[in-house]
Image (cartoon, rainbow over all chains, first blue to last red; front, side, top):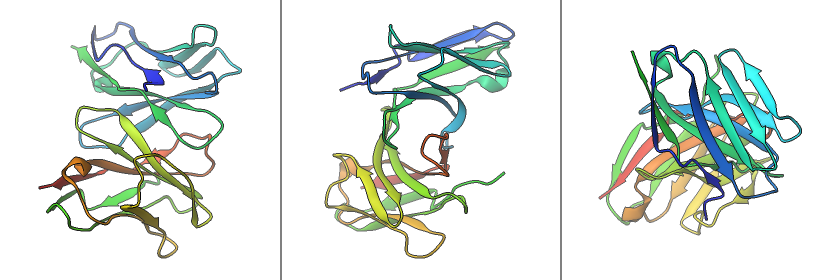
Amino acid sequence: DQQVKQNSPSLSVQEGRISILNCDYTNSMFDYFLWYKKYPAEGPTFLISISSIKDKNEDGRFTVFLNKSAKHLSLHIVPSQPGDSAVYFCAALGGNEKLTFGTGTRLTIIP
Amino acid sequence: EPEVTQTPSHQVTQMGQEVILRCVPISNHLYFYWYRQILGQKVEFLVSFYNNEISEKSEIFDDQFSVERPDGSNFTLKIRSTKLEDSAMYFCASSEVPLVGYTFGSGTRLTVV
Protein backbone atom coordinates (compact mmCIF):
# COMPACT_ATOMS: atom_id res chain seq x y z
CA ASP A 1 0.00 0.00 0.00
CA GLN A 2 2.02 2.93 -1.30
CA GLN A 3 0.39 6.00 0.14
CA VAL A 4 3.30 8.20 -0.91
CA LYS A 5 4.81 7.61 -4.33
CA GLN A 6 7.86 8.94 -6.04
CA ASN A 7 7.58 7.57 -9.55
CA SER A 8 11.02 8.61 -10.75
CA PRO A 9 13.69 6.44 -9.14
CA SER A 10 16.43 8.61 -10.62
CA LEU A 11 16.99 12.03 -12.18
CA SER A 12 20.06 13.65 -13.77
CA VAL A 13 20.34 17.42 -14.07
CA GLN A 14 23.07 19.70 -15.35
CA GLU A 15 24.75 21.87 -12.76
CA GLY A 16 23.14 25.31 -12.59
CA ARG A 17 19.82 24.12 -13.99
CA ILE A 18 16.61 23.46 -12.09
CA SER A 19 15.96 20.07 -10.49
CA ILE A 20 12.32 19.13 -10.05
CA LEU A 21 11.45 16.15 -7.89
CA ASN A 22 7.88 14.93 -7.80
CA CYS A 23 5.75 13.15 -5.23
CA ASP A 24 2.16 11.94 -5.24
CA TYR A 25 0.05 10.82 -2.32
CA THR A 26 -3.24 9.01 -1.96
CA ASN A 27 -4.25 9.57 1.65
CA SER A 28 -6.46 12.65 2.09
CA MET A 29 -5.67 12.67 5.80
CA PHE A 30 -2.10 13.80 5.16
CA ASP A 31 -1.81 17.44 6.15
CA TYR A 32 1.92 18.06 6.42
CA PHE A 33 4.60 17.17 3.92
CA LEU A 34 8.36 17.07 4.24
CA TRP A 35 11.33 16.53 1.99
CA TYR A 36 14.42 14.73 3.23
CA LYS A 37 17.80 14.35 1.60
CA LYS A 38 19.93 11.31 2.20
CA TYR A 39 23.58 10.64 1.48
CA PRO A 40 24.95 7.09 1.52
CA ALA A 41 25.72 5.80 5.03
CA GLU A 42 23.88 8.73 6.63
CA GLY A 43 20.38 9.21 7.98
CA PRO A 44 17.79 11.36 6.20
CA THR A 45 18.31 15.10 6.69
CA PHE A 46 15.31 17.40 6.83
CA LEU A 47 15.21 19.91 3.97
CA ILE A 48 11.91 21.71 3.79
CA SER A 49 8.26 21.18 4.69
CA ILE A 50 4.83 22.49 3.81
CA SER A 51 1.52 22.51 5.56
CA SER A 52 -1.62 21.60 3.64
CA ILE A 53 -2.97 25.11 4.18
CA LYS A 54 -0.24 26.48 1.92
CA ASP A 55 0.61 25.85 -1.69
CA LYS A 56 4.21 27.02 -1.67
CA ASN A 57 7.11 27.26 0.74
CA GLU A 58 10.51 28.60 -0.14
CA ASP A 59 13.85 28.33 1.65
CA GLY A 60 16.87 29.54 -0.26
CA ARG A 61 17.42 27.37 -3.32
CA PHE A 62 14.63 24.99 -2.28
CA THR A 63 10.94 25.51 -2.99
CA VAL A 64 8.18 23.03 -2.32
CA PHE A 65 4.87 23.29 -4.17
CA LEU A 66 1.71 21.55 -3.04
CA ASN A 67 -1.32 20.90 -5.24
CA LYS A 68 -3.91 19.47 -2.88
CA SER A 69 -6.56 18.80 -5.50
CA ALA A 70 -4.09 16.70 -7.48
CA LYS A 71 -2.51 15.24 -4.31
CA HIS A 72 0.85 16.18 -5.73
CA LEU A 73 3.87 17.98 -4.42
CA SER A 74 7.17 18.86 -5.95
CA LEU A 75 10.56 20.04 -4.78
CA HIS A 76 12.41 22.56 -6.93
CA ILE A 77 16.12 23.12 -6.48
CA VAL A 78 17.57 26.05 -8.35
CA PRO A 79 20.35 26.42 -9.22
CA SER A 80 21.38 22.79 -8.80
CA GLN A 81 24.82 22.18 -7.34
CA PRO A 82 27.04 19.06 -7.29
CA GLY A 83 26.51 18.75 -3.53
CA ASP A 84 22.81 18.28 -4.17
CA SER A 85 23.49 14.80 -5.54
CA ALA A 86 21.72 12.49 -3.10
CA VAL A 87 18.54 10.50 -2.64
CA TYR A 88 15.51 12.68 -1.92
CA PHE A 89 12.56 11.33 0.05
CA CYS A 90 9.13 12.83 0.18
CA ALA A 91 7.30 12.14 3.46
CA ALA A 92 3.87 12.89 4.85
CA LEU A 93 2.23 13.29 8.25
CA GLY A 94 -1.46 12.92 8.92
CA GLY A 95 -2.75 13.64 12.40
CA ASN A 96 -0.19 11.52 14.18
CA GLU A 97 3.56 11.36 14.57
CA LYS A 98 4.20 8.70 11.96
CA LEU A 99 6.06 9.76 8.84
CA THR A 100 5.09 7.88 5.70
CA PHE A 101 7.95 7.95 3.22
CA GLY A 102 8.06 7.62 -0.53
CA THR A 103 10.58 5.30 -2.15
CA GLY A 104 13.01 8.09 -2.98
CA THR A 105 14.50 9.67 -6.09
CA ARG A 106 18.22 9.57 -6.69
CA LEU A 107 19.32 12.98 -7.98
CA THR A 108 22.60 13.26 -9.83
CA ILE A 109 23.95 16.71 -10.66
CA ILE A 110 26.22 16.64 -13.69
CA PRO A 111 29.07 19.17 -13.53
CA GLU B 1 24.58 21.48 15.71
CA PRO B 2 22.82 18.94 17.94
CA GLU B 3 22.67 15.46 16.49
CA VAL B 4 21.16 12.06 17.12
CA THR B 5 23.85 9.45 17.77
CA GLN B 6 23.44 5.78 16.98
CA THR B 7 25.67 2.88 17.95
CA PRO B 8 26.94 0.60 16.61
CA SER B 9 27.15 1.73 13.00
CA HIS B 10 27.17 -1.89 11.84
CA GLN B 11 26.04 -5.00 13.69
CA VAL B 12 26.33 -8.56 12.40
CA THR B 13 24.39 -11.19 14.30
CA GLN B 14 23.39 -14.81 13.94
CA MET B 15 19.78 -15.64 13.25
CA GLY B 16 17.91 -16.22 16.51
CA GLN B 17 20.18 -13.98 18.56
CA GLU B 18 19.07 -10.88 20.41
CA VAL B 19 20.37 -7.46 19.39
CA ILE B 20 20.10 -4.08 21.02
CA LEU B 21 20.46 -0.97 18.90
CA ARG B 22 21.29 2.16 20.81
CA CYS B 23 20.43 5.78 20.24
CA VAL B 24 21.12 9.03 22.04
CA PRO B 25 18.45 11.53 20.96
CA ILE B 26 18.88 15.30 21.07
CA SER B 27 18.74 16.30 24.71
CA ASN B 28 15.70 18.60 24.72
CA HIS B 29 13.63 16.43 22.40
CA LEU B 30 10.61 14.64 23.82
CA TYR B 31 9.51 12.38 20.96
CA PHE B 32 11.56 9.43 19.81
CA TYR B 33 11.21 7.12 16.85
CA TRP B 34 12.64 4.09 15.14
CA TYR B 35 12.46 3.62 11.39
CA ARG B 36 14.06 1.04 9.18
CA GLN B 37 15.05 0.75 5.55
CA ILE B 38 15.51 -2.63 3.94
CA LEU B 39 18.05 -2.41 1.14
CA GLY B 40 16.47 -0.94 -1.97
CA GLN B 41 13.15 -0.25 -0.29
CA LYS B 42 11.56 2.77 1.33
CA VAL B 43 12.08 4.02 4.86
CA GLU B 44 9.39 2.48 7.09
CA PHE B 45 8.03 3.60 10.44
CA LEU B 46 8.46 1.16 13.30
CA VAL B 47 7.52 2.90 16.54
CA SER B 48 7.12 6.25 18.27
CA PHE B 49 7.77 6.84 21.96
CA TYR B 50 6.69 9.69 24.18
CA ASN B 51 6.46 10.15 27.92
CA ASN B 52 8.06 6.77 28.57
CA GLU B 53 5.60 4.78 26.57
CA ILE B 54 4.91 3.69 23.03
CA SER B 55 2.53 6.16 21.39
CA GLU B 56 2.22 4.39 18.07
CA LYS B 57 3.62 1.31 16.36
CA SER B 58 3.42 -0.26 12.93
CA GLU B 59 2.53 -3.80 11.91
CA ILE B 60 6.24 -4.50 11.56
CA PHE B 61 6.75 -3.83 15.27
CA ASP B 62 5.59 -7.20 16.53
CA ASP B 63 6.33 -9.01 19.79
CA GLN B 64 9.97 -9.60 18.92
CA PHE B 65 10.59 -5.84 19.07
CA SER B 66 10.72 -3.66 22.15
CA VAL B 67 11.90 -0.16 22.97
CA GLU B 68 13.17 1.29 26.17
CA ARG B 69 14.50 4.50 27.57
CA PRO B 70 16.63 3.00 30.34
CA ASP B 71 18.00 6.34 31.54
CA GLY B 72 17.63 10.01 30.72
CA SER B 73 19.67 9.88 27.56
CA ASN B 74 19.53 6.51 25.77
CA PHE B 75 16.72 5.11 23.64
CA THR B 76 17.11 1.48 22.64
CA LEU B 77 15.51 -0.90 20.17
CA LYS B 78 15.71 -4.58 21.09
CA ILE B 79 15.05 -7.38 18.65
CA ARG B 80 14.63 -10.57 20.68
CA SER B 81 15.16 -13.32 18.14
CA THR B 82 16.50 -11.94 14.90
CA LYS B 83 15.39 -13.26 11.53
CA LEU B 84 17.11 -12.94 8.18
CA GLU B 85 14.47 -10.45 7.05
CA ASP B 86 15.37 -8.12 9.92
CA SER B 87 18.51 -7.19 8.00
CA ALA B 88 18.14 -3.46 7.31
CA MET B 89 19.34 0.01 8.20
CA TYR B 90 17.70 1.08 11.43
CA PHE B 91 17.31 4.81 11.97
CA CYS B 92 16.57 6.49 15.25
CA ALA B 93 15.01 9.95 15.19
CA SER B 94 13.88 12.53 17.69
CA SER B 95 11.83 15.70 17.62
CA GLU B 96 10.85 18.48 19.95
CA VAL B 97 7.30 18.40 18.66
CA PRO B 98 5.99 15.94 16.08
CA LEU B 99 5.21 18.41 13.35
CA VAL B 100 8.71 19.82 13.21
CA GLY B 101 11.00 17.84 10.95
CA TYR B 102 12.60 15.02 12.82
CA THR B 103 16.33 14.76 13.26
CA PHE B 104 17.56 11.36 12.19
CA GLY B 105 20.69 9.54 13.30
CA SER B 106 23.07 8.10 10.76
CA GLY B 107 21.70 4.60 11.26
CA THR B 108 22.78 1.14 12.33
CA ARG B 109 23.21 -1.42 9.59
CA LEU B 110 21.98 -4.74 10.97
CA THR B 111 23.03 -7.86 9.11
CA VAL B 112 21.48 -11.14 10.21
CA VAL B 113 23.33 -14.22 8.99
